[in-house]
Length: 95
Image (cartoon, rainbow, N blue to C red):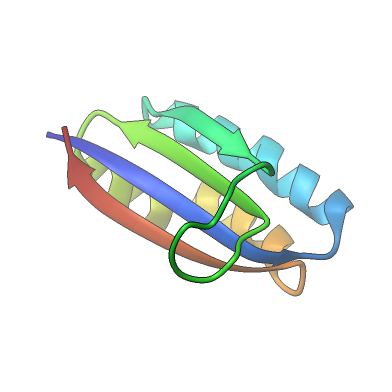
């Protein structure tokens, strides 16, 4: 089964850092044979807390999704989010 990342952003406040994170994160996802399926700042919350951005990435399998998240490249990318966002990030297995 495929592996997925979903990130739900509650707040974003440093767009320069967020842009740099996005460039680095995309390259890392692709390095692990993943792809960004969707990213949007336009969503409607039907249940739960409001968000300002949602992103979804797909990987060949659950283990690869975890390896990418724990990779040194992605750890470096995440440094650009420190103090710039409040978000939830989940890794899950699906079809």
